Amino acid sequence: MFKEIQNENNYKNLINGKWVDSQSKEIICTFSPVDGSNIACMQAMTKEEVDEAINGVKEAYPKWAAFTSTERANVLLKAADLLEESAEELAEIMVREIAKNKKSALSEVIRTVDFIRYTAEEGKRIKGETLEGDTFNGYTKNKMSFVKREPLGVVLAISPFNYPVNLSASKIAPALAAGNGVIFKPPTQGAISALHLAQIFQKAGLPDGVLNTVTGRGSVIGDYLVNHKGIDFINFTGSSKVGKHIAEMSGMIPMMMELGGKDAAIVLKDADLDDTAKAIVSGAFNYSGQRCTAVKRVLVLNEVADELVEKIKMEVKKLSVGLPENDADITPLIDLKSADFVQSLIDDALNKNATLVLGNKREGNLMYPTLLDNVTEEMLVAWEEPFGPLLPILRVESVEEAIRIANASEYGLQSAVFTKDIDSAFYIANKLEVGTVQINNKTERGPDHFPFLGVKASGMGTQGIRYSIESMTRPKAIVLNLHLQN
Ligand code: NAP
Ligand code: G3H
Image (cartoon, rainbow, N blue to C red; front, side, top):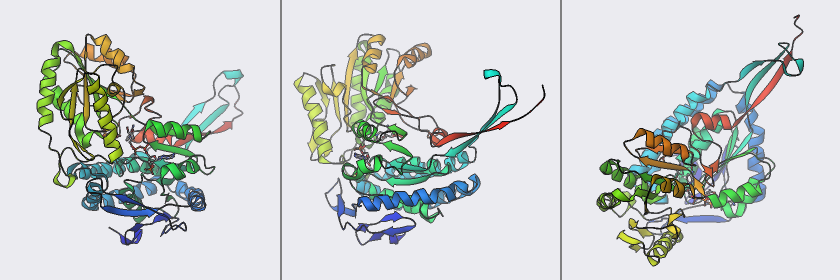
């Protein structure tokens, strides 16, 4: 990779085309979730430097907006090529930085390459429309509105630790395709992978200042960023707690938010239980459950519960536990605090008489996959998002009870329904208060051009390539007043 981004172990920020150190001389170091070794350090930027970064984008983006959509697409396509070339190296960084296993880290990068290429093409299809006047207030065809789509201006992109490349690019690329400039605040744990991504966009030929990066702890510079007068749109992915805080702090800045989830897998009597168990285990335990769309509870009809639990147990037993570099399925969680939280949910459930089927074992922040049966609504794990390898199973009497419990959650990201009966599947899907219902598969975000959204505490606005581009543009109407004779 290109070296000017770092000074020995210290990473710089991209400001107006140059990689610079902060005047604060204050650095934040991150440590490997696997062995505690120092990964790298980054800059804690001052408020003045944040101002400079935002003002730089404000000044630079109109030039970028004036490029043709094909010229913008060519820069994005070049970025995709460079990212593809760097896939191995970036995946290695992610393995160390966020303990994602090598296979998943590589797949995250390749998925992002595809995402950027598709975005480049979709960016060429941003369309306006022409409307003819109608009979409102007696107007007739003497009026025509030319509705163009314009970029919003300066987009603040804030991404979470669990997909530092993909969930950063899925904000940056659509924003750029639409002609916006971007202030990019990466997650602190994940910043090194994310800063490399920023450098790839720079190397692809993005004009200076169109993408500037800002590092520093979200809890310290976050409030300053999210109500900064220079920001025109906030595109945030992270926890519901931080999302709500940003919404409160940011006044009238428009925003898109993708937040937490408590995705339910509802299993009916006629489901194919072998396929269902496989889908649920992959959905619940990939990247050790640290995915917003992980299956986070199973609601199974009593009649097939024993059989399903047994099949899930057999699948969970196949998961390897260990190091990300060895491609283990279950790897250390991002930090000790996260592991403590998962443990507290297990302890609470066991104290309230849940049945431990497997797991409840840990070594520091390495949590073994844990399966809890006979979970009830009194237990925290029925409602809280563990963000770890913990799957609760709630047995239900009826489809209506499953729907009630699924909808009682504060979250509304996705749900899955497993059944061979398409009428039941659609009946349940129509009743679930979520952004997406998966029929006969695990909950998941992709393919990345599908709409992806959460309701209730799971978010606002819609991601997905075309949806993301549209949400970072606004209509601009120019009205032509004609003097036609009737
Ligand atoms: P997080 O703690 O909410 O952090 C997300 C981002 O927000 C990080 O870049 C963080 O910076 C920043 N931040 C923290 N406080 C801030 C503040 N006051 N103002 C502005 N920014 C602030 O989430 P996480 O632990 O990284 O990610 C896990 C959570 O994200 C889970 O709840 C998961 O469900 C959710 N998630 C949702 C989706 C989705 O699409 N729905 C996708 C992925 C993850 P620092 O790192 O510097 O603290
Ligand atoms: O963590 C949240 C991500 O948006 C989930 O994406 O379903 O592809 O793992 P994924």
